[in-house]
Image 1 (cartoon, rainbow, N blue to C red):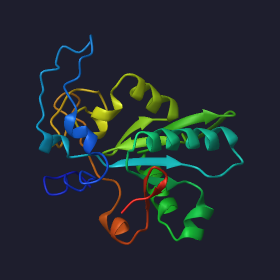
Image 2: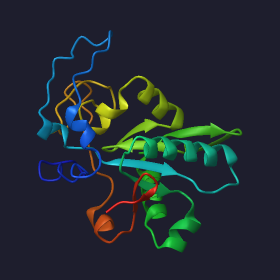
Image 3: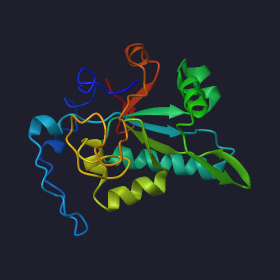
Image 4: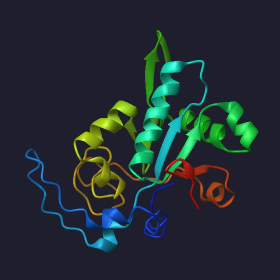
Amino acid sequence: MAISDASIPRDISNGPLSKFDSLSPRNHEHDAKSHIVETAVEAEQLAEVVLVTTSLGSIKKQFFQSKRAQHLLDCKNIVYYLVDANRDISVAMNLKDRELFDKWVNEGRLKMSTLDGVQRVMLPQLIVDGVVLGDDRAIQDLEDDGDLDYIVARLLCPKCLCEKRARDLNCTRCSTEYTSIIPQEYIDNSSVQRLYQGHPYD
């Protein structure tokens, strides 16, 4: 589902992420295009943030990396949708996690990685406005570089990190189209977990 002008406000701008109102233009030495100045209203249009994880402890590397990624988002006070690839959790909690996970795999939306010589879906992975950012290490790198806040505030393209306006529907540089991947009906029916600091967020 492509993001439209009507769907862009489907975010968490009225929630605890108001700190993004005061974001100033980036000032990276390698970035010669830090001339974009957003108003507070534009900066409030926050992205759809989805963290795909696994609570299955049999693959310890993926399990602990999932915990690290979730901890980082919690410490950042980011509101996000948690989608657990563990089928048992979906059944036990009556969630649509596994249905969404399988759909994204079939669409080729999720990144793959090789673990113990086997090609698997990379877990965890963070998705912002339909664009995969990467695993826990990639998320930490974006945070260390000072880019994560701007991506979540829709001021940087999550694909190429080009500066953008919060209401842009696609990137003028890499042509990436920003999409919402969590159906509104799942949100309305509480069929997905929406978390803030590790707790349910309404």
